[in-house]
Image 1 (cartoon, rainbow, N blue to C red):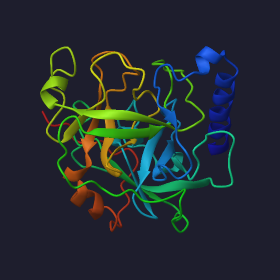
Image 2 (tube, helix red, strand yellow; image 1 turned 60 degrees about the vertical axis):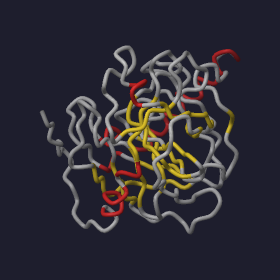
Image 3 (cartoon, rainbow, N blue to C red; image 1 turned 120 degrees about the vertical axis):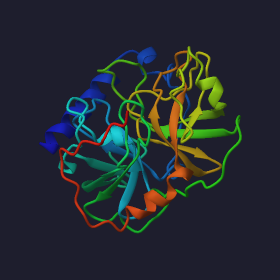
Image 4 (cartoon, one colour; image 1 turned 90 degrees about the vertical axis):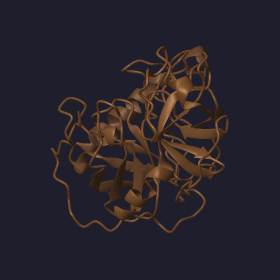
Length: 280
Protein backbone atom coordinates (compact mmCIF):
# COMPACT_ATOMS: atom_id res chain seq x y z
CA UNK A 1 0.00 0.00 0.00
CA UNK A 2 2.81 2.42 0.90
CA UNK A 3 4.52 1.75 -2.43
CA UNK A 4 1.26 2.53 -4.20
CA UNK A 5 0.99 5.83 -2.33
CA UNK A 6 4.55 6.79 -3.25
CA UNK A 7 4.04 5.92 -6.92
CA UNK A 8 0.84 7.97 -7.02
CA UNK A 9 2.67 10.92 -5.47
CA UNK A 10 5.49 10.76 -7.99
CA UNK A 11 3.02 10.42 -10.84
CA UNK A 12 1.22 13.57 -9.73
CA UNK A 13 4.53 15.43 -9.65
CA UNK A 14 5.48 14.14 -13.09
CA UNK A 15 2.17 15.25 -14.54
CA UNK A 16 2.62 18.67 -13.00
CA UNK A 17 6.02 18.92 -14.63
CA UNK A 18 4.51 18.40 -18.06
CA UNK A 19 2.59 21.71 -17.91
CA UNK A 20 3.57 25.06 -19.39
CA UNK A 21 6.48 27.12 -18.06
CA UNK A 22 3.97 29.56 -16.59
CA UNK A 23 2.27 26.76 -14.66
CA UNK A 24 5.62 25.56 -13.35
CA UNK A 25 6.71 29.02 -12.21
CA UNK A 26 6.70 30.11 -8.59
CA UNK A 27 4.02 32.71 -9.28
CA UNK A 28 1.93 31.90 -6.17
CA UNK A 29 4.09 30.64 -3.33
CA UNK A 30 7.24 32.34 -4.63
CA UNK A 31 10.52 32.35 -2.76
CA UNK A 32 13.94 31.05 -3.72
CA UNK A 33 15.12 27.47 -4.19
CA UNK A 34 16.77 26.11 -1.05
CA UNK A 35 20.29 24.74 -1.22
CA UNK A 36 21.42 21.48 0.35
CA UNK A 37 21.94 21.90 4.08
CA UNK A 38 20.16 25.25 4.33
CA UNK A 39 17.12 23.85 6.18
CA UNK A 40 18.27 20.35 7.05
CA UNK A 41 15.64 19.91 9.77
CA UNK A 42 12.70 20.40 7.37
CA UNK A 43 11.20 17.10 6.21
CA UNK A 44 8.19 15.79 4.30
CA UNK A 45 5.44 13.92 6.13
CA UNK A 46 3.69 11.57 3.71
CA UNK A 47 0.07 10.71 4.46
CA UNK A 48 -2.58 9.16 2.20
CA UNK A 49 -5.25 11.34 3.82
CA UNK A 50 -3.96 14.70 2.53
CA UNK A 51 -3.39 15.04 -1.22
CA UNK A 52 -0.34 17.33 -0.96
CA UNK A 53 1.03 15.65 2.20
CA UNK A 54 2.36 17.64 5.18
CA UNK A 55 5.66 18.75 6.59
CA UNK A 56 7.53 18.22 9.85
CA UNK A 57 10.72 19.29 11.60
CA UNK A 58 13.47 17.04 12.98
CA UNK A 59 13.86 17.41 16.76
CA UNK A 60 16.34 14.62 17.47
CA UNK A 61 17.29 11.26 15.99
CA UNK A 62 13.94 9.72 16.97
CA UNK A 63 11.35 12.49 16.80
CA UNK A 64 9.86 15.08 14.49
CA UNK A 65 7.41 17.91 15.18
CA UNK A 66 4.33 18.58 13.07
CA UNK A 67 0.75 19.81 13.25
CA UNK A 68 -1.82 17.60 14.98
CA UNK A 69 -4.14 18.07 12.00
CA UNK A 70 -1.60 16.23 9.84
CA UNK A 71 -2.09 12.98 11.75
CA UNK A 72 -5.88 13.17 12.08
CA UNK A 73 -8.34 11.72 9.59
CA UNK A 74 -10.01 14.75 7.92
CA UNK A 75 -13.27 12.84 7.58
CA UNK A 76 -13.65 11.06 10.92
CA UNK A 77 -11.48 13.55 12.89
CA UNK A 78 -9.82 10.60 14.65
CA UNK A 79 -6.09 9.94 14.88
CA UNK A 80 -4.92 7.75 12.03
CA UNK A 81 -2.74 4.68 12.42
CA UNK A 82 0.96 5.71 12.32
CA UNK A 83 1.45 2.81 9.90
CA UNK A 84 0.23 5.10 7.12
CA UNK A 85 2.80 7.82 7.77
CA UNK A 86 6.30 8.20 6.35
CA UNK A 87 9.05 10.76 6.86
CA UNK A 88 11.31 11.80 3.97
CA UNK A 89 14.45 13.56 5.18
CA UNK A 90 17.81 14.68 3.84
CA UNK A 91 16.64 15.67 0.36
CA UNK A 92 15.71 19.10 -1.00
CA UNK A 93 13.99 17.57 -4.04
CA UNK A 94 10.97 15.30 -4.29
CA UNK A 95 12.26 14.11 -7.66
CA UNK A 96 14.85 13.13 -8.63
CA UNK A 97 15.74 11.08 -5.55
CA UNK A 98 19.27 11.73 -4.31
CA UNK A 99 21.64 9.49 -2.36
CA UNK A 100 21.12 11.83 0.61
CA UNK A 101 17.50 10.76 1.07
CA UNK A 102 16.49 8.94 4.25
CA UNK A 103 12.99 7.46 4.61
CA UNK A 104 11.50 6.43 7.93
CA UNK A 105 8.18 4.95 9.02
CA UNK A 106 6.37 6.37 12.05
CA UNK A 107 5.86 4.17 15.11
CA UNK A 108 4.14 6.59 17.51
CA UNK A 109 1.97 9.68 17.17
CA UNK A 110 1.71 11.90 20.23
CA UNK A 111 -0.94 14.57 19.67
CA UNK A 112 -1.37 17.36 22.20
CA UNK A 113 -4.17 16.15 24.49
CA UNK A 114 -6.02 19.45 24.23
CA UNK A 115 -5.87 19.81 20.47
CA UNK A 116 -9.04 21.47 19.21
CA UNK A 117 -9.77 20.98 15.52
CA UNK A 118 -12.45 23.70 15.61
CA UNK A 119 -10.13 26.47 16.79
CA UNK A 120 -6.73 24.92 15.93
CA UNK A 121 -5.63 25.57 19.49
CA UNK A 122 -2.77 23.23 20.51
CA UNK A 123 -2.46 22.04 16.90
CA UNK A 124 0.83 20.26 17.48
CA UNK A 125 2.12 16.68 17.54
CA UNK A 126 5.39 14.82 18.11
CA UNK A 127 6.03 11.72 15.99
CA UNK A 128 8.51 8.97 16.78
CA UNK A 129 10.21 7.25 13.88
CA UNK A 130 10.52 3.47 13.72
CA UNK A 131 14.29 3.63 13.18
CA UNK A 132 16.68 6.36 14.29
CA UNK A 133 17.87 8.88 11.76
CA UNK A 134 21.57 8.44 10.95
CA UNK A 135 24.17 10.43 12.83
CA UNK A 136 23.45 14.07 12.11
CA UNK A 137 25.27 15.72 9.23
CA UNK A 138 24.64 18.73 7.01
CA UNK A 139 21.55 17.29 5.26
CA UNK A 140 19.73 15.99 8.36
CA UNK A 141 20.07 18.01 11.54
CA UNK A 142 17.80 18.82 14.50
CA UNK A 143 16.22 22.25 14.77
CA UNK A 144 17.11 24.60 17.60
CA UNK A 145 13.92 25.68 19.40
CA UNK A 146 13.36 29.39 19.85
CA UNK A 147 12.88 30.41 23.48
CA UNK A 148 12.42 34.18 23.10
CA UNK A 149 9.38 36.34 22.49
CA UNK A 150 10.00 37.97 19.12
CA UNK A 151 8.77 41.46 18.28
CA UNK A 152 6.35 42.24 15.47
CA UNK A 153 7.97 42.82 12.06
CA UNK A 154 10.70 40.23 12.76
CA UNK A 155 11.69 38.75 9.40
CA UNK A 156 11.57 34.96 9.45
CA UNK A 157 11.65 32.18 6.87
CA UNK A 158 9.61 29.15 5.90
CA UNK A 159 11.06 26.30 3.85
CA UNK A 160 8.79 23.83 2.08
CA UNK A 161 7.51 22.12 -1.01
CA UNK A 162 4.00 23.60 -1.15
CA UNK A 163 1.65 23.70 -4.11
CA UNK A 164 1.37 26.70 -6.43
CA UNK A 165 -2.42 26.87 -6.39
CA UNK A 166 -5.20 26.63 -3.84
CA UNK A 167 -6.85 23.58 -5.37
CA UNK A 168 -7.45 20.15 -3.79
CA UNK A 169 -5.69 18.42 -6.70
CA UNK A 170 -2.79 20.87 -7.02
CA UNK A 171 0.60 19.19 -7.32
CA UNK A 172 3.47 20.26 -5.07
CA UNK A 173 6.68 21.72 -6.39
CA UNK A 174 9.53 19.27 -6.79
CA UNK A 175 12.14 21.53 -5.15
CA UNK A 176 12.23 22.98 -1.66
CA UNK A 177 11.65 26.73 -1.60
CA UNK A 178 12.41 29.32 1.06
CA UNK A 179 9.92 32.15 1.50
CA UNK A 180 10.09 35.22 3.77
CA UNK A 181 7.52 35.47 6.56
CA UNK A 182 7.25 38.67 8.58
CA UNK A 183 5.69 38.41 12.05
CA UNK A 184 2.47 40.44 12.14
CA UNK A 185 0.75 42.04 15.11
CA UNK A 186 -1.98 39.75 16.43
CA UNK A 187 -4.69 42.48 16.40
CA UNK A 188 -4.11 42.93 12.66
CA UNK A 189 -4.56 39.21 12.04
CA UNK A 190 -7.64 39.07 14.25
CA UNK A 191 -9.50 41.72 12.25
CA UNK A 192 -12.96 40.69 11.06
CA UNK A 193 -11.85 40.50 7.41
CA UNK A 194 -8.72 38.51 8.24
CA UNK A 195 -8.85 35.68 10.83
CA UNK A 196 -11.69 37.15 12.89
CA UNK A 197 -10.26 36.60 16.40
CA UNK A 198 -9.07 33.08 15.59
CA UNK A 199 -5.41 33.83 16.39
CA UNK A 200 -4.91 32.97 20.05
CA UNK A 201 -2.15 33.83 22.51
CA UNK A 202 -0.35 30.57 21.80
CA UNK A 203 -0.04 31.39 18.10
CA UNK A 204 2.09 33.56 15.82
CA UNK A 205 0.73 35.26 12.72
CA UNK A 206 3.20 35.83 9.89
CA UNK A 207 3.22 36.66 6.21
CA UNK A 208 1.36 39.45 4.46
CA UNK A 209 -2.12 40.96 4.59
CA UNK A 210 -1.83 42.09 0.98
CA UNK A 211 -1.85 39.90 -2.11
CA UNK A 212 1.56 38.27 -2.10
CA UNK A 213 3.73 36.17 -4.39
CA UNK A 214 5.50 34.66 -1.37
CA UNK A 215 3.08 32.68 0.74
CA UNK A 216 2.55 29.26 2.28
CA UNK A 217 0.16 27.00 0.40
CA UNK A 218 -1.26 23.47 0.33
CA UNK A 219 1.33 20.88 1.30
CA UNK A 220 3.00 23.16 3.86
CA UNK A 221 0.84 22.24 6.89
CA UNK A 222 2.95 21.25 9.89
CA UNK A 223 6.07 22.91 8.51
CA UNK A 224 8.36 25.15 10.53
CA UNK A 225 8.74 28.92 10.79
CA UNK A 226 12.42 29.75 11.34
CA UNK A 227 13.40 33.03 12.98
CA UNK A 228 17.06 33.85 13.56
CA UNK A 229 17.81 30.29 12.46
CA UNK A 230 15.65 28.74 15.18
CA UNK A 231 12.34 26.87 14.94
CA UNK A 232 9.75 29.35 16.11
CA UNK A 233 6.40 28.10 14.84
CA UNK A 234 4.51 25.11 13.43
CA UNK A 235 2.12 25.97 10.59
CA UNK A 236 -1.45 25.40 11.80
CA UNK A 237 -3.71 27.30 9.36
CA UNK A 238 -3.82 30.24 6.97
CA UNK A 239 -2.69 28.45 3.82
CA UNK A 240 -3.95 31.26 1.61
CA UNK A 241 -1.60 30.64 -1.33
CA UNK A 242 -0.99 34.36 -1.74
CA UNK A 243 -4.51 35.81 -1.51
CA UNK A 244 -5.14 38.95 0.54
CA UNK A 245 -6.02 38.77 4.23
CA UNK A 246 -4.94 35.15 4.63
CA UNK A 247 -1.58 35.28 6.45
CA UNK A 248 -0.19 32.09 7.90
CA UNK A 249 -0.76 31.21 11.55
CA UNK A 250 1.74 29.12 13.48
CA UNK A 251 1.72 27.42 16.87
CA UNK A 252 4.27 29.28 19.04
CA UNK A 253 6.91 26.62 19.77
CA UNK A 254 8.44 28.41 22.78
CA UNK A 255 5.16 27.97 24.68
CA UNK A 256 5.19 24.20 24.11
CA UNK A 257 8.85 23.36 24.71
CA UNK A 258 8.19 21.51 27.97
CA UNK A 259 5.39 19.46 26.43
CA UNK A 260 7.51 18.66 23.37
CA UNK A 261 10.43 17.41 25.45
CA UNK A 262 8.15 15.30 27.64
CA UNK A 263 7.09 13.28 24.61
CA UNK A 264 10.60 11.97 24.05
CA UNK A 265 10.41 9.62 27.04
CA UNK A 266 6.84 8.37 26.63
CA UNK A 267 6.44 4.60 26.37
CA UNK A 268 2.70 4.35 25.72
CA UNK A 269 1.21 3.82 22.29
CA UNK A 270 -1.89 5.97 21.74
CA UNK A 271 -4.45 3.91 19.84
CA UNK A 272 -5.47 4.76 16.31
CA UNK A 273 -8.97 6.17 16.36
CA UNK A 274 -8.38 8.39 19.37
CA UNK A 275 -10.46 11.55 19.19
CA UNK A 276 -9.33 14.62 21.15
CA UNK A 277 -11.84 16.41 23.37
CA UNK A 278 -13.46 19.51 21.91
CA UNK A 279 -13.85 22.14 24.65
CA UNK A 280 -16.88 24.37 24.42
